[in-house]
Length: 235
Image 1 (tube, rainbow, N blue to C red):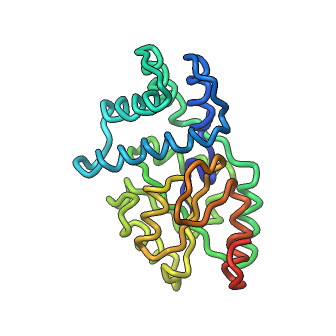
Image 2: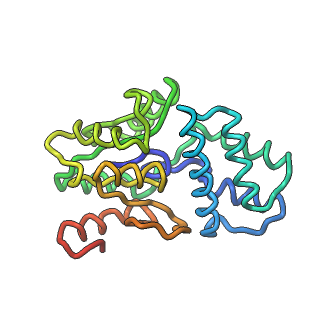
């Protein structure tokens, strides 16, 4: 099973590209591929989890605080930079680019008998319908046994229940037989692990050492699966 944004598709521009370009514009010489950017986004996730313990969804003011944290971590203290990063994240809300390996990976897995699913946090009819349209445009809808969207079932990652509900939808599969790949350690990895699934973190920068399997691109999942199935560990 897969997360959507940052896993099957990447945001356009990507998180790292967007934050890297803003950092350079405001005087910080940092490349898009710097692992420090991965660490920064993970710190933002920690704050996000903390906020969601008190609210069931993030407000506009919450997102401003979260974006401000990114700049603070970079040592940027500029109202203009904050306005720009908030606006740029908002502008790309419906902009995605499919990873070049995505279709080959999905077709390979489907051809070899794997059941495929998506679990994603998403609210709002417009956003949800857009994701379905995007999957249909790419000819991907028929590849998935189940698509579980938080706004449709009232459960959100990292709650283990959304993962378990998704496993049930697959039919005849147990959680321990299921692998979940996502780009968020706190929402995807910890949530899948708590549900008894095998979690795999997708992070092209791999900036933090976490206690889970990791790949730098979606294509790496084939080697992970082969290694797990032959008992030799990830390859």
